[in-house]
Structures are given as structure tokens and as C-alpha cells.
Image (cartoon, rainbow, N blue to C red; front, side, top):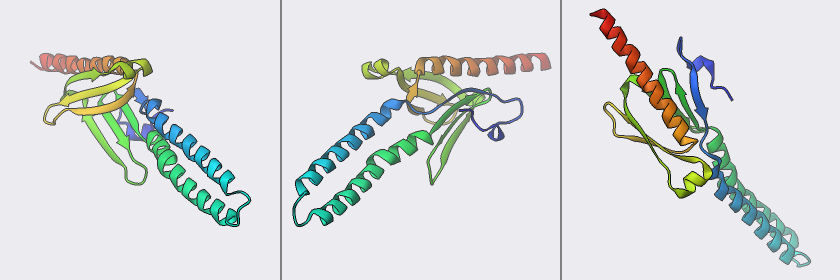
Length: 172
């Protein structure tokens, strides 16, 4: 899915656009299965009793709330979180009802590093740590193919600074 061109400046293009890794959806899917399985079991226990219909309604309401809270909300949060590297900046956008975002110009990025443990390596993701000129390091968790993103971001930072150095040299 391409990032909206209306948010990009002139001569700016998207280098990387991704959502968090799908591994963050594993627990919500497991919880969904537990809620459905537990609800079906309790509905079967209530079958044939005098309280069958009110019990099924209560199970449906409680199960529906739990599915929305534990499964649907994390899915929508995952889908509306964007990690974007362009030729000029690093952008992170997240949120559904209340959106928040971070933009870091390439020229302000001092260093880029990544961390990934054994589980992250098995899933092919990790944490990207970006240090900028005046802020404390920002950590972006569950970035898919974090090593490739790290390399691309590092390349974009250095390409931009090489061009700036060349421009400064030519102005002398």
C-alpha cells in the first residue's frame, strides 16, 4: 500500500512504508480463539436449562465485548500504524480516533541501530533505534525486516549528508 502522496513534499519519495510486524497480532488471535471456544463451551452447558436464552444473550454480549477489546482493537491499531522512510524524513503515524505522529528530518538523524533477540530473528523483525540531534533515542518496535530498514535508513541519512557536504563545498 503506497503512502499518500499528498503528505509528501516536492522531490520527496517513499523508500520504505510498512506496518508493525504481524507477530503483534498473535496474542489477539489466540485470545479470539479462547473467547470463541469458551463461549461455545458455556453455551453448550447452558443448552436445555431454564436460563438458556438469557445465558446465551449474556455470553454473546460478553464475548462480543471481549472480541472487540482484545482482537479488533489491536488489529485496527496495527493497520493504522505506519512506519515510513522517505528521501527526506522518517515518519511514524499511529492511532485511530486520536492520531499522533513523529517526523524526523534526515539531516537531524545522528545514528541508527537495531536490536532483535532470538524470537525477533525467527520472525524477521526487531526494534529500530534512531538518535536525533536534540531528542533522546526513539525506539520503534516490531519493524519487519529491521536489518534492511536499518541499512536503507542509514543509506538515506548518509546520502543526504553527502549531498549537503557537496553543496557546502561548492559554495566555498
